[in-house]
Image (cartoon, rainbow, N blue to C red; front, side):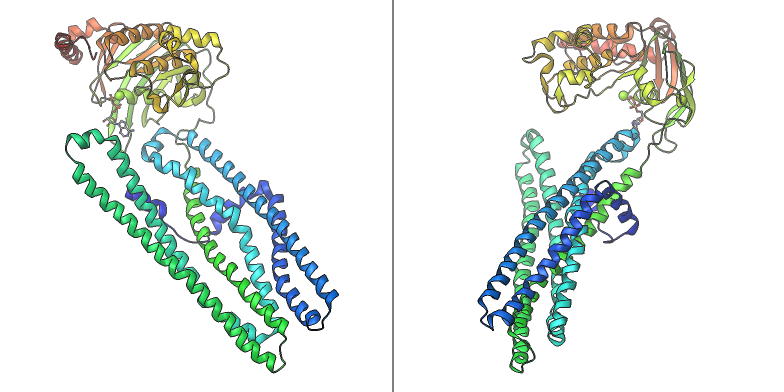
Length: 602
Ligand SMILES: Nc1ncnc2c1ncn2[C@@H]1O[C@H](COP(=O)(O)OP(=O)(O)O)[C@@H](O)[C@H]1O
Ligand SMILES: [Mg+2]
């Protein structure tokens, strides 16, 4: 957890031309909006400089001359400019925020659709939390760049230049004196922003720690109380909580120093202006109006300078985020469709594994020289101990990983030359861990495919014996499925996943049987459902229950990644090999369990 957070928080350069070029491309669809916003910003900056100038003019030309009419009209002009500036700022802000949000929207869609295209091994290497961060925090950091960063930096610089120019125009010496306050101001602001950022980073790290600690302790409360861990865990929590408090107190310190410091610096600047400006007025080198304009200008200086250091941080964060986002977007699927890949059509359902070698990592062979043939319509079970490589075989059949050696053919066509889409249409896979999405039961079966009719849906549910319990739900097919299907029993989830496979009517059915215990009644239902599922299809079943094995035509025994036995139930029993031992073992267990209770795990 800690590692992950530090990785997320690493910051590098504030400007990277390569990343910037790529980021700018996201602005392209919104070029017009950005140009309009930019033009508005130029006007807003010019108007901001107009304030001190108008004041100077009013004092020196109208107030000192007692010109009521002139004073009234210049005041009116001042108000008019302020009003126009308000409207321009409104549009500028609105346009930039809107553009930022649109870009975020585009980016999130792009990242999500890219994620979907990636091979499963990618998700083994990258924790969920990290990927979610790409779509959320990282995209947010970029949004800030677009909505407040890029364009407004230009405005800030423009405003600064305008003010400096004005000061030098009025009085060179006084301009130099006023500007002498700028370097310390800039340094103060910069240091503060840096420290505050570090502080907030620490706060976020400790918040994350508190969260994960809480999550673990709340979900594991039973264990905590069972093992009398309350005191120990309380002390542990107290430590993390105190770290969080201290991190916060530190940032409060920075804040309490920074704002008064800026006040003091700006007061010093004003004092210097009044002193030197006053002397200049006494010696008639300077007017009252110019003095007031100077004071106003000096005060307008501080915001853009503070903002600039803020924007530096935004830029830095955005560069780091974009680096990570682009790295993700640049990760390509390791198994793209071959250029000449064909669509599987009129699938018969012949499968052949020819001398397959496969490893998830390097040379740790999980499958070793695996070969077998499954003919159209045949029902084959794969059995073997946990870790033998059964699920791996299914993963390869579904083309979720790239095989290192050998080939898999479907209807005689090398699966490397079959498009992934048509292959997955032909092969219906029911996974060991049934996964239900949050949504309705209907959506979980049809996966929101509108081509599936109501009749087909009901028929599929009836065929797998799921209809009975679904129709008893308060809302039937519309019943809400909670996250990960927590409001359904294991057996019900399994039946729903069967219906999902059946409704797509695949020619090849692949099923990784769930190992979890279910009651006998549900087991009988599932067995019936299974028989219906296998009808008229080539079926590959990873079997854990004896009942399943009895109904298949053939059994393949996998042991430590190798096919060790292959034949019918009777043949394998006669061989007195691994299958015989497995069978005897399970049979004995079942007997004992039946003695103890009515619930059988097999
Ligand atoms: N995603 C993975 N990354 C690395 N190793 C894996 C992965 N999935 C499975 N393995 C390893 O491959 C071997 C076979 O696993 P698996 O095919 O799931 O076995 P089975 O389904 O027969 O229990 C095991 O040693 C397991 O640790
Ligand atoms: Mg498995």
